[in-house]
Image 1 (cartoon, helix red, strand yellow):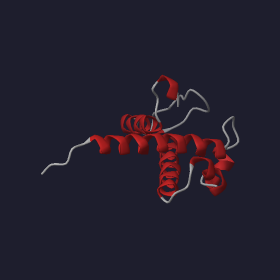
Image 2 (tube, helix red, strand yellow):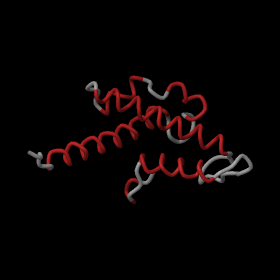
Image 3 (tube, rainbow, N blue to C red):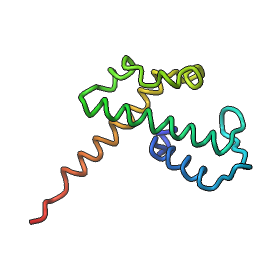
Image 4 (cartoon, one colour):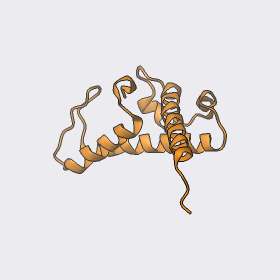
Length: 118
C-alpha cells in the first residue's frame, strides 16, 4: 500500500472487494507480488486484512498505542503463511495501526469541525 502516492489500507480492502465482485470461479488473479491466485484467494486475503484491521482498531480504542501493538501478536494466526516475506507480521501490524490511527484522527478532526443542529 503506497501511502505516499495516496494509497490507503481501506482503499486496498475496497479494491479486493471489487476484484472479488468481478471474479468468478474460473478467474485467475495475477498479483503484483506472489503466486497466481483465485477468487477464493482474494476473499482469504481480504478477510485477513479486515480481521487484523478490526483487531488493531479494537486494541487502539481500548487505549493501546501504535508502538504497543506488535507485542499483542495480532497477526499470529497468519504469520506462518503471510509473515515470512519482506514484511513480517509485527511490521504489518504497525502499518495497519498507523493507517487506523490516521483514520481515527481524521474522523475525530472532522467531527470536531461540525456544528450541532438545534
